[in-house]
Image (spheres, rainbow, N blue to C red):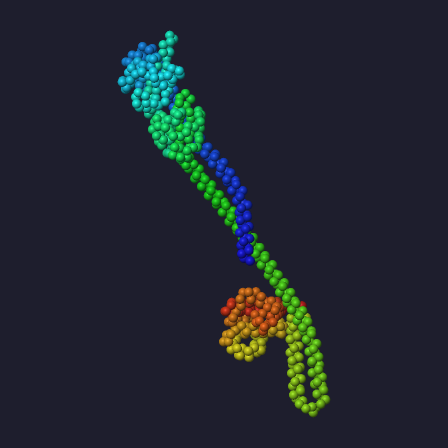
Length: 556
């Protein structure tokens, strides 16, 4: 039965927990996905803003240098710029005002270096007509090259401006920019650890050194993203197959692309920590729901179990009462059927006595009188038995009188004295001297003591003992205990001990003794309790009221 309650408890708890946590789980999953996307977007916004700001710095850097060269080309004549000394002075002023310039040169319309100011004097007279940048500056009038090596055999950037006079003459003022300036602008981005930023061209070739992807002019190894002049972010894989967040922006007037790369795990580090917090809150919430559900259902199951036990006990009491009622009706019928033959026997015995009175000299008269006396005593004994049976059936009036319980116990022991001696059972009397007298029916009470003592003697082996004790509880009740050290009873036997026709004596018992005394004690307003342990003995305690409380009886 207990396993059924435990199974019911588990099922209800699981249903309640599932009903409570399923919406929470769905809501948590939805919020998890949405919050993750929102968190990632929010974490990317500062990254994109940084890239846009750095791109603006690059564009300003190029615009200032290109404007300076354009101003020189338009402010000075061809002859003035062809003068190497004057070009050197102009170059010195440029270096003083603007950082990054490496050299300055005048190139004729045919592509020959006419004059030069800078550290590479060996470039004097070099023909650039075959260079790609030379053809582009002719078509665009202003050109900012990618990083390339050229005749210098070292990475550099060229800014070239073509000037055309009114008479159609043209020349090109060309300046070289040191690429170390790019590194300074990137360093000013104040990148967090693990983040890499660099310039590439539109073909995916590095224009500056990268922390993770190589040196300038190496191939990046990552597919170029779709062109956009705004800062855009994509999640992709790098050349090593590691997930990365790539933020980039294309330059409008050049082939440059500014990129910043952050490992995805670095991007989501804060989100991972927050995710653990969310998961912890969710787990704690689920556990709290489960604990509350378990405790609530536990209390509910406990009450249900208590209610079922009370109902089962009530049904057992009803069943017991019905059995006692049936036994009472049976006892009344048996007593009625026996009393009639007993009355006839008694009358015949009286008639024989009368006939013998008319025959004073009747042979063997004394022997016949003795037999008639025995018949009348036996009839009287049978009448007492049927009288008690009718008393159990509550069909006879009960005689209430003041009784000394200690004296009644001693009188009852007289009936069992020979049996106790024969079985070598020691009966110990622990009787309270100040025990008050009680109002009860002598015959019924004596029957209770006799039946209990008979069972105690039957349960004790030879050499055992039975202890009889009486006590005044002080609350209007006295307690009579019969304790033996006999074989004891199992729990299953104790459950049925007061049921009619239940016996452990097999063919020897009728199973009515304990049922009868149970009915007697209950009708007297008392109680009877049995405590037993298999192999250790049994204690039967009879509690009786000092003042009689038998229903329907007004007293003696």
